[in-house]
Image (cartoon, rainbow, N blue to C red; front, side, top):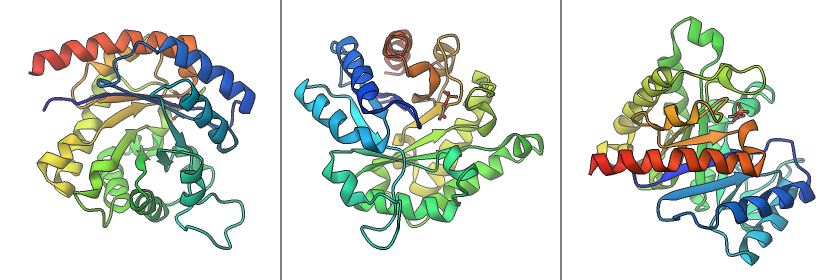
Amino acid sequence: MIKKKLFLGTNTKMYKTISETLEYLSDLITLTSDIDWDDVELFVIPSFTSLESAGKLLRERGSRISLGAQNMCWEESGQFTGEISPIMLKEVGTGIIEIGHSERRHIFGETDQQENLKVKCALKHNFKALLCIGETLEQKNYDISDEVLSMQLKIGLHGISARQAGNLWIAYEPVWAIGVNGIPATKEYAAMKHKTIRGVLCRLFGETTGNSIPILYGGSVNNQNAADLISMPDIDGLFIGRSAWNAENFNKIIRTVYPLWKASRAELK
Ligand code: PEP
């Protein structure tokens, strides 16, 4: 299977105010201005409050960096205090909706059924839906990671057609690998889980669509492990937290992985 694009993105979580986001994005736009956008899908998912100004900046600078939202309600409007609707996110030019990040699931108690409502809603509104999945350390120790991933995909993607799945991205982010206390997955472990995910996607949507859905790895990606991870089969991109929150460092990772990805793609042709 020839990989179409390299996916590299970051979610800045509850960090960076509007001015900090703009400073960061401005640096990132400058540093990445020579990127071959036919090859690379670069995206940033900042705070809700930053989205509008970030979108304006990207348009003014003519950058092809995409913007995403960290969460979204599955309803268009109504009595949902504290939630943000797809219409509101469209209004500020958001293209991607991140769904089911481990912090949403494990701190805020979101369920697979709720993620499914969000995926359906995001696809209905023509967003790219970035569904995050991943097992906890306890589940890994019980050796039920594959079952957990399979369940998260089967419920999270329930009722989605192969045609709709064209706008679907998956991030595999093992819970034990994320954040300051996270231990990054080895490239072998990550590749094994990506293979499992690919298998489920092919069973759900058929080989052609299943193989075309990008699967990104996330969880303590850094300058040391990015090259190894991107060289593995079925790892189509990296979803990076801390190591990407400094534009120069993110750019270093981009420059490290892009030539490797390009070379591996040439070999597949
Ligand atoms: C994340 O929270 O999705 C993430 C990948 O963070 P980090 O890279 O900092 O582990």
